[in-house]
Length: 139
Image (tube, rainbow, N blue to C red; front, side, top):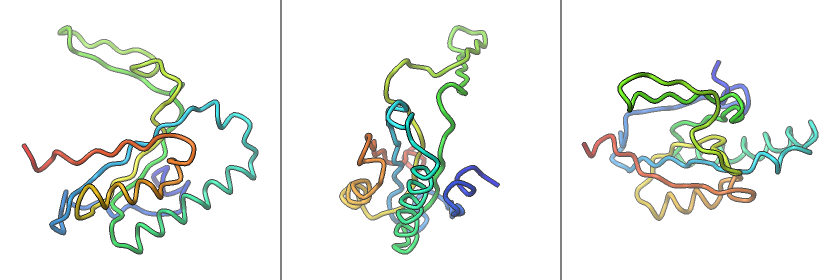
């Protein structure tokens, strides 16, 4: 079972990019982990319910493709082979206060619709939601 399935209680409906003739957008969810340091178990349950409702709304609208919630940056491993040899380091690529905590993938008609859904994303209330169009069909 994927982490997103166990955390949110939802399953992925991943499909081919733009399978319905729409545009696929990914929301990258950034926040400062320090903002969650004092959350109680009850707070986490409440957050799961908020995200579950958001996922339900995406599914009901027929635009949900996929989601996942990422473990903290302290579990990250970064790999680079740019110098010709593989180098592996513990930790994230960049040292920043805000970190990538998860993502949503949606399939909507255009950027305006993606912006509307990103505005409803719970992560927008305490962090940032970066919206990126899929490039899979543009190459």
